[in-house]
Amino acid sequence: MSKTVKKVKFTNDFQIQQPPRDEFLTLMRQIFHCARCFGIAGSSKYYWKLWGVVLLICLTVVEIGSIWKVVKALAGWAVSTTGHRSVTARLAGATLYANAVLSLILTWRISSSWGKIADYWIIIERAITTRIPRDKYLDKKMIAVELFFIICAEHTMSVLAVIGLDCPASHLLKRYILVSHGFLLQPDDYSVSVAISLIILSTVATILWNFQDLLLILITLGLASRYRRINFYVANYCTKNKKETVSKNTDNVEIFTWRKIREAYVKQATLVRKVNDTVGALILLSNSCNFYFTCLQLFLGITQGMTDTALTQMYYLSSFIWICLRTTMVVLSAADVNVSSKGALPYIYEYPTKDYNLEIERLQYQLSKDYVALSGMGFFFLTKSILLQMAGAVVTYELVLIQFDDTDLNSTDPINATMI
Image 1 (spheres, one colour):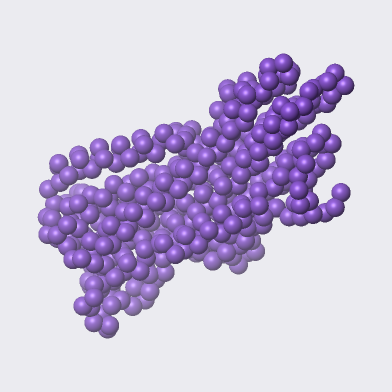
Image 2 (cartoon, rainbow, N blue to C red; image 1 turned 90 degrees about the horizontal axis):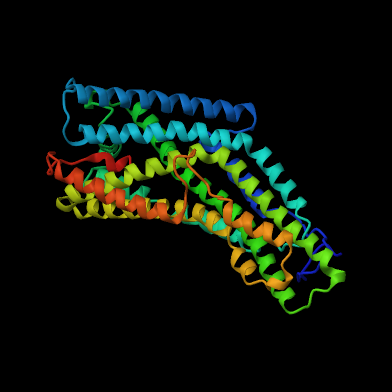
């Protein structure tokens, strides 16, 4: 058999069709390689790990300071709790940096264990002895998602909303830091060195927040792609056998083929659960953080954005849309794994009853009863229904927050600078 297979023939010769390289694993290695720049060192060399530890320590220090500011505001010890030093602003800043610290730890853990996952991924790929075609468009989808995250992030809009269009060039840095990190700094605490340090750390925190969602989307794309490949093979195999009469001579071959197909689904479900054990904590963190900031941005957009400048209104709108898009992409891409895990059932149901054998019955029972879905450490499963549940929860919390809101609506809340 030649190295390049242009056309797949669905036969019973049980030869392994391996691509020259696995595009998914190659792209994931490149992504983790680039992630070292913002602290996700994984199994890299010691100097990258040192850089990651330094960032982790700095982010932790900022987070501790943010929590202390929240405690002071709640205890009534704070000098000012209005505007960009309100409890809402302090809590938003503390949440952003808490997410950065946890995200750095969890993504570092995933990066460190990705080598074992990749090895297991390849072992399962080679263990599937039926000729399952490769996904020609997976690498293009992954690149498109990466470009979407890079282009659509509203960082520039958030900076403009903070500093405004009337700020003199000599005061840009000071205004940006005192407004975006007003929950952490007083005007007397400002210095250029502190400002530059906070800009670096806030940028890293924002990148980590976006990267955790990107990572989950890419991993789920790979898992769903493998399911679709097996489903495609089953669909073509069923169509082919409907047109042919199964003789006694080929009955044993049919049983053997369906057994290998069933084993392929077992191995794929095992891979999904193995991956979920690694990324489950990140799924919980990502969805919790996205839910909080979705509620926060919608609340601020309704209570403050309506009476603010046009630039700030544009920021609230774009930020809210961006967070909703990211959350939707994470949930739907993960839900596609659950949907694809049962994608072969319609073809099996339509298979001629007279040609049924024990292995087909086992496969049908396995696919209908085995629940395969990614979860946030078992607290929830990422299916299509959870998206509607999240939307309903957001609306409920917004109504409660607006009803009991007693803040000064004319004050300028600067947390949009930390919301990127």
